[in-house]
Image (cartoon, rainbow, N blue to C red; front, side):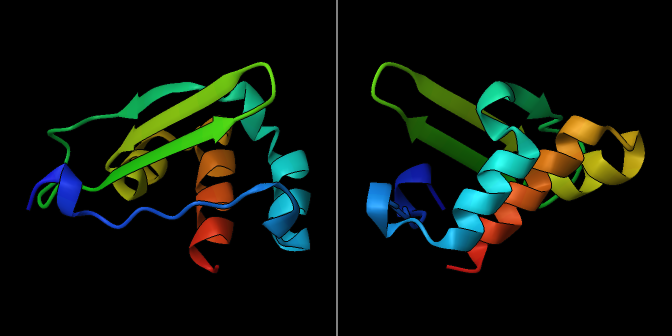
Length: 91
């Protein structure tokens, strides 16, 4: 499988559900930009990429092996990113 084979979900402004907006504020996801996790931590590789385009900025989050990373580090930032990703996956 190649990255171009993966599904892409696009959510735009007013189309964001109240659940997404609520978790966006609660998790402070806009201050979590960066690359996290370890590509070699597990097989098969779990890969999440989130790009949030704002009027004057872009926030990008890349997370490798999110589940393994959360369990092994217990980092609050990783838990917040996970919570936001879970809310997106409900849509």
